[in-house]
Amino acid sequence: MNFASDNVYGIHPRILAAIEAANKGTSASYGYDDYSKRAEEKLSQLFEKEVRAFLVTSGTAANGLALSALAPSYGAVLTHAEAHAAVDECNSPEMFTGGAKIIGLHGVEGKITPAVVEKTLKGFIRSEHDPKPAALSITNSTELGRVYTPSEIKALSAVAKSRKMKFHTDGARFANAVASLGVKPAEITWKAGIDVMSFGGTKNGGMLLEAVIFFDTALAEDFLYRRMRGGQLVSKSRYLGAQMLAYLEGDLWLENARQANGLAKRLVEGLKASNRIRMPLPSDANEIFAVMPKKLHDKLQAAGVHYHDWMPDTLGPKGIAENEIFVRFVLSYATPPEEVERFIGLVKDLVSA
Image (cartoon, rainbow, N blue to C red):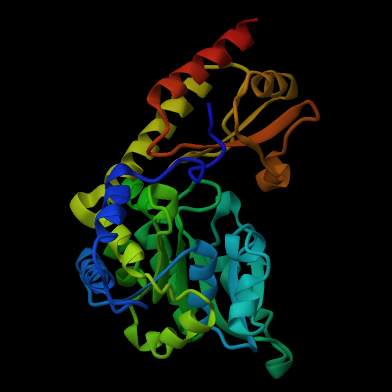
């Protein structure tokens, strides 16, 4: 029973088949292959807008390269304090931007608010002694499993645009956000004010499946050079393009996300039925956060269940007791439903015992 991450599961069979099919014959290299060109066209159709899309191999590279097109070396990028760009990507964004300062803002449930952004920007009073506010970055769905709604994104965009800042979305689990909200992708991206996004697929059935998508295509100028310099221009690029085409074909990306979200909802129901586990955060997508007794945690670990303990400070004033532990479960499109039921049954048995 593995709920450690959606990264622990393999490639979706349809995507794997697409890679195998693309392996036949010869193809142009370095992004000039037909697969990559068609993938960009399909992404334009998906977002109902002509976009520039650049395929890369990791979410870390996607975020760093995207932000490098938005923030100069003397700039500042505002994001949530627990966003990947702030804490999970070493100092990759700083490297790709040439030294821009990543400023982490506090916000409940992984979200930042217009009020927090405005308050932070009011602190930039030292002219050139401060870094120049250049970009705002949000994660959707967030690191705590919540999603930003179109109205929330628009409100943040209004603040950013009032200071002539660019707006970026880390969409490592973008599919899960779209599936949760039941909206079209455009509604929580460019129509809400997003300029650039990191469009993720690796966590949702891909092998190496990430893209930097520019809704403001003027910002894509010279991005070919940025991708090359960043070591993300893959010579056999057809394999990235083939993955993206298969991912989008027949809305596989949404099908997978709905499956993962649905399994998460079922697990939440099962855990709530226990009088020993509490859910301090709502679960909008495929991540679940729970507080349980350490003794129960130890027994689950001994039984071979895989999940991660999480930073208790995340809960803020809600906190946890000394004999409790804060944990995270992540569901994948490939998580066997029977393992979810088996885990729910195991928790019930252990609590009863």
